[in-house]
Amino acid sequence: MATMTETPKNKCNCISCELRNVAFTNLNEKDISRICEAREERHYARGEIIHREGDAIHDFKYLKHGLVKLYRVNSDGDEQIITITRPLEFVSNTNVFHETHYRYSLSALEDSDVCCIRLDLIRELIEENGKFALNLISVLSRTSQNIIAIGLEIRQRNLAGRIAYVLLYFANEIFRSMIFDLPVSRKEIADFISMSPANVIRTFSDFRRDGIIRSNGRTIEITDMKKLEVISRRG
Amino acid sequence: MATMTETPKNKCNCISCELRNVAFTNLNEKDISRICEAREERHYARGEIIHREGDAIHDFKYLKHGLVKLYRVNSDGDEQIITITRPLEFVSNTNVFHETHYRYSLSALEDSDVCCIRLDLIRELIEENGKFALNLISVLSRTSQNIIAIGLEIRQRNLAGRIAYVLLYFANEIFRSMIFDLPVSRKEIADFISMSPANVIRTFSDFRRDGIIRSNGRTIEITDMKKLEVISRRG
DNA sequence: CGCGGCTTTGATGTTCATCAAGTAAAGTGG
DNA sequence: CCACTTTACTTGATGAACATCAAAGCCGCG
Image 1 (cartoon, rainbow over the protein chains, first blue to last red):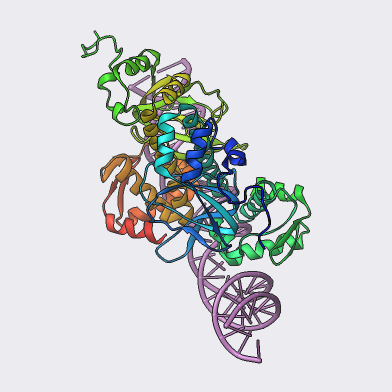
Image 2: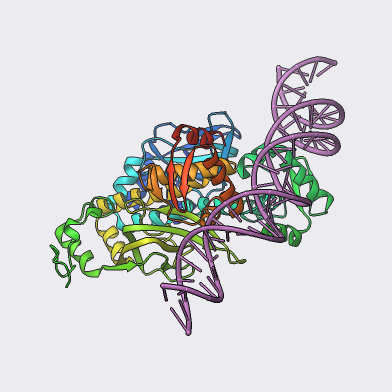
């Protein structure tokens, strides 16, 4: 009972793939089909782990659809979340080109489709196609830069400021909406901003009491954007 | 009364430059001399600013000798230090390939020599020489990765843990010695780890009292490495 | 319906920022 | 070279911010 799609075999639709304009620019038809044949698209259900820190790196991974978190686990078993990111913002891991094993884990916060391309092939294309290489460097830099910037912003702020920043991050960068379903638990937010879960929850309650947000479980509505921005700037 | 050097005109010694093995691999003699002619080596005295956030990016900058800090200044005028780094660990800024203006400032903590190469030329070489491009991606990734890792380590720790981490960072990564002169003020350490200067100083005093370090002004000697490592891990 | 995990809130103590005051060190001008 | 100014450093006292612990409510799942 599968729905008819425009590309029935789900094969070689790369030519019309929207991601071509992001990371895979300046490739001719032949190169595109080389990628197409070598690539493997994998689906991950919400909560599934895409790769673990320490796993060998074989593929260049690109998020096509969904939402993922990049994180690491310390010796006590608790997580530190490095970034939460959407497609077009995330290109593989930051260390695929200078290390053999993943340094951080990646898991799906929503059902996600990941396009995996053998790293060897990407390397070949870089070697052969300078314009492709230049663009890829630009995209990779932007990804790293975003992770660095988020870390700096978090580090600078106190508890309330961090929560405000994260809420604005979800509203502006991830969902582009004032009302959204948080893709993470309170505990995960705590793991992201390096604060205790209890105080994350307390701050949510404060914001609710002060009319800055409405919240029901994971559903959040920002009701006073101005005030939230002030807290994010001040905190 | 200039001392005689092996390359009297300080021109085109690039062929024997030790940095060739780091960022400028896989270049033939002709390409090396192209770089050599286009490059400009600039000296910065301790305390001088190499570039400011917001400056237009023209060059690919490489630290040949010295020690620098990458930082940004917030609206209140206080600094946030992003990383402190030596040559061979630092290649230009992280955003030279995807932005037109520097996002962060860079200044010299010790007298430093910076090799500046027109970015256009680097782009040309990337386009023409795939192996050069591949290596450059690897080096750029490592630089970004280091900055990200430092941020994560700092975020995770409390005050004492952060100080311990920074001292170990200087001892192991920067100076490779148990005794060294701090290249930064207490205030700058505070700007690095996002804590107040007073508490940074207090923690130094605590460490001194507990026999973990000896310190005299900026001169630091780590006298109990084991304990420092425990604090860094626990904190 | 019972169990376990996530969420919430309160109470308590620790950690940290801030303010203030004093000391040392380092630059500045005569 | 000394007096002066400025800046960095140091310590204590105080209150605010935050972690931790504990208990209770909620929700999903078997």
